[in-house]
Amino acid sequence: MKKFKELRKKANKFIYKSYEIQEDEDQIALHFHYQLDEEGKITDFLHRLSIKKNEKISTDFSMQNIVFHIGMAEAISYYKIALPQDFVIECGSLNEAQKKWFAKLYFNGLGEYIYLNAIEVKQEDLVHFTCKGKAYDKTALPTQENIIIPIGGGKDSLVSYELLKEEFPDALMFSMNPIVASQEILKQHPTHAIELKRELDLEKILDFNARGYLNGHIPFSSIVGFISIWLGLLYKTKYIVLSNESSANEENIIYNGQKINHQYSKSIEFENDFREYVFSFITEDVEYFSFLRPLDEIHIAQLFATFAKEHFFTFRSCNVGSKRNEWCGKCPKCLFTYIMLCNYIDDITLQKIFGKDMLDDEELQELFDGLSQSDAVKPFECVGTYDEVNYALSKKYHSYSQQELPSLLKNYKPKERAYPLHVNYDGQNNLPQKFKKNLKSHVEKLSF
Image (cartoon, rainbow, N blue to C red; front, top):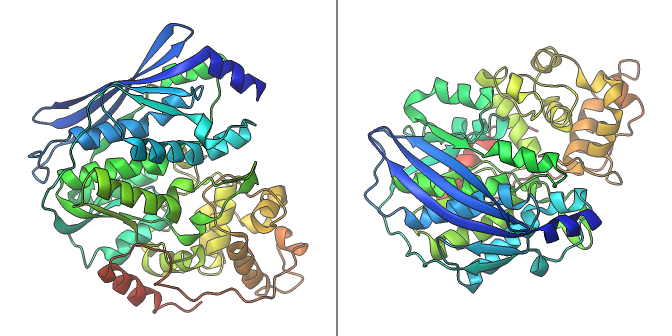
């Protein structure tokens, strides 16, 4: 906490200086210029985002508003260096409702960062926005009944694509992730792929970290959200289809009265806030929602095992190993994914996918406890709820004899209480009716 106060006092102003839209025959490039004022010494950051042009893209509308907002979302990667309270916006303007919206996003989206760096700060004290630019008008644009799916390389977005591809044969996909798995998926579907490139001013960020400034998790899905709205406008596509499930709503821990959720920007709370913001201030013609929101990880695991078999050996959910196109076999994400799939993919195939029987690796005991015991700190990863984990483990436990139990299940006590596998399609979700109908038709084919 002391270090945070010292750094924040030293680097006391963040400036969203400008953005540029550069367009030629081959691409559209967005450049965002940020500054951090460190006791009068200004450090400039240049953030880049570009898209390869094709015949499906139309730029017959003003991009100023949505591009300005992409810059507001992307700024958090640089703002988090010191979390200065003074945030000056020189290239646009936010009204009081918009300032309040972004203050909430920054506070909750940086919740894990705040917790792990032992920072004590209230939402109203984290960031104050001052605007020196002009406000932008909303965009009105006719859009088509098609979908754009952000692809992360894991099982969830692949499930969305496989379930929707027949109804939307012209579905588009893009990835914000340079990992091999997501890029391979796009290469396998070249006519559906949106070629997007995102470049952080990473060397300067790392320089600040080397000098003792703080680092941590950001609400990356909020960045994906604003960029996806831009893509919806460029491709005149109505639906942005996310693949966030119900378990993304569960916090990891409560800290100083705040729910710290690694997946905040994947939660229904953020989704509702984002939809309202886009509708009010950006456009009413592109709709953002999560197709898998009514489902638990258990449902998604069986859908993946049933409808996405071709992706068994190419999908990757491991943040550690994904850059090498492998499962590291040592992290919470690997273990969680293995547990979710262990009842729906046969043991031999599953062990080939992950390179070993992860339930028989006693070195993973601490991670296993973190995933399965509610009195432990839930790992700061995109993993499901304790109930989901224990349902899967208990089901798997009873498939063994006592002599066959793998290491991690030998001291595990299965939970006998029933897990509600019924899907509430009318619960907290934003699915249009046609998407509910599609999802329901596929889930009804499963047997849990």
